[in-house]
Image (tube, rainbow, N blue to C red; front, side, top):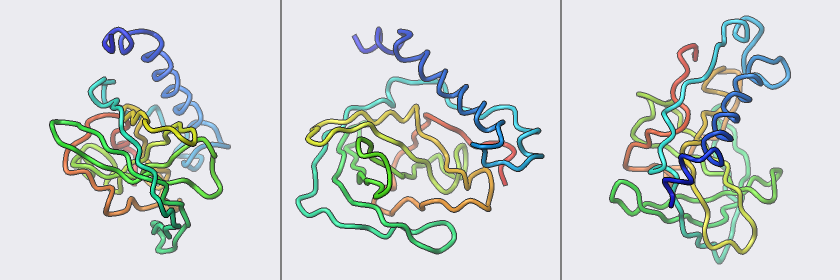
Amino acid sequence: MQDALFNDDNYIQPLLKEREEKDLSFRSRANSPFDDAGRRAFKNLVYYEPNLDYRVNASVEKLAQQDTLLMPLTNGSYEPYLRYGTASFELEGEQLKLMLYKKLTGEKDQLFVPFTDKTNGFETYGGGRFLDVPFEEGDKKVVLDFNRAYSPFCAYNPDYVCPVPPKNNRLSIAIPAGEKNYEGAH
């Protein structure tokens, strides 16, 4: 059943369209981390091939006491995020857990998951990658679609300030899914 879903246009085509739209936005002035020369040189981002194994269902455990974390940023400052809960899942035969955050100024129906894994600094941006996870209050499950993992803008331009994934979101395995290193990055 999942293979049919994965091979179906309902999954692959929207994912590929998202990737094309991101490339287009990186070429435009308004939504690009690149300066004029960088936009002219930019062709496209590089991704791992979509792989259903890295689209996982995770159990959500909402924290009884949600508190604000001052997440470190790449420039040494901090930005507040609400620690919402944890997502527990199995991948590569291991039981894993990631902390789920809510941006205090962000989408109300979305969770933010900054993470690192064994691909960082090799095949993917060394500072980690991010997931934006659709979520409605009361959900007991979420889909962590690592095929949609993306690099922050600071991966392309050191003038951008980005969150640094917290230590508790360091995965002990490689996640060969989503966005890879960009060759033109700093």
